[in-house]
Length: 581
Image 1 (cartoon, rainbow, N blue to C red):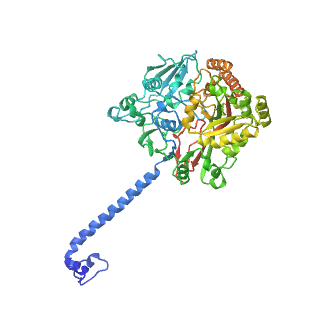
Image 2: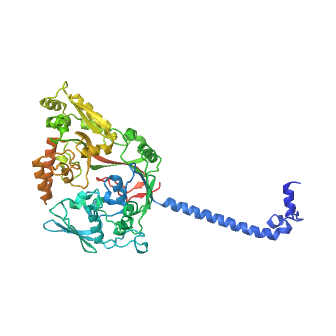
């Protein structure tokens, strides 16, 4: 006998004498008909449960698909989430999502309300009084009673700003209030909703400084409880809060459901449910992830891929136009070569760069328009004016007389300096890997006029160290505005400032007098005129070789809307949405 027959016998199976095609019971063994009816009922219940589970899973998948998640990659990683150390873009981007400042910068670089609804400035421009919102709460955290975030008050603003200048904090942003804010009575809480800032002397850009991520308002309880671990336990009032952070792997920010800001229709911001950050340190991997639509956007484009995506005129190639969006915006960043001009430095005494004519010759020998087209695919604008980039209200680029491409003039200046092709000394130019091609381009053009420039590529950290210690006579550099005022660029050349920011050690008494006058000037038009005079002085003395005024470039997934680039290249996600196509 086979196994099937044994089974049938065990079940007491007997072929019924009559069959009814419409009655399934008629096909069952008579002995177990009652049991089978029960089993059928149970099976029906199981089928019902199965279909219910399918519906629930389908709904869950739909709900998950309805979630709006913004994905981006940070190749340099994120060192901390403590805004007191928001010294670079990767940290600023994240802290901007987690915290608020009392004022902020709008898309047109105007000071706009944030935690402060309104403010007044005293007649002598020394006292700034801010009236805070009364509906802002820190995000929920175990540091608060019951884990519920508490109301943000003026005392929190005082604590946060004092923490920046406290030497125990060792904040990289301590300089922003140096010699500007009264060290004793500089920060005061008049009451829970009124904060007062007192300056030592008028300083027009102070509101711009208060928009910096350094000035984010933090919860004292969190700083004191977590100590050094506050870097990974942020507690702010921003549009997002930290969900988890696996350092070097991924970070997820989730929507702060208690966030105070609403759009014009009264809908709560942000629109996004989450932000996920990956940390691929390879730009090729990042670009591949973007191509496969696993990243919402990429910031800038690696030189390795620029020709694949962009034309020499800076537009998308035809094969990319239907796949992605290209968003460009003037960026408050000037890329330049710096020249050490401290005549007391032995490196300068023995360098041909100590002579102004040689520095000017280098400026004249560069075809910046050609550089932009072939080295940059027209990303940015040739720096043929001053050191201050386009986009600032002082409008320096429209009035400063810079250096146009003039190799004949460059050669003439070299002859005046006593340099010809036979006796041309070697000038070493320090740069970082990503700018090696631009440095080589400039070296080739310098060779055309008989000047020998030797390019040496070193790591960024070493270059920063050498420029800070006056060990680099000729070096690649850039200056991204900390706040949107030309004063921020002029501070690079004020002789009383160390390196940083005065990496060239420029010292011109006439410049210093103009700078100090500008700090006292409360009339914007007059102040801007002083900035332009200072900029022209710097360009004439040539301690720098401006190369180009940078441009923000975003390659954006077409599902992303409400994500415009801005002049500070700050990651702004409050009104961003991801709409599935």
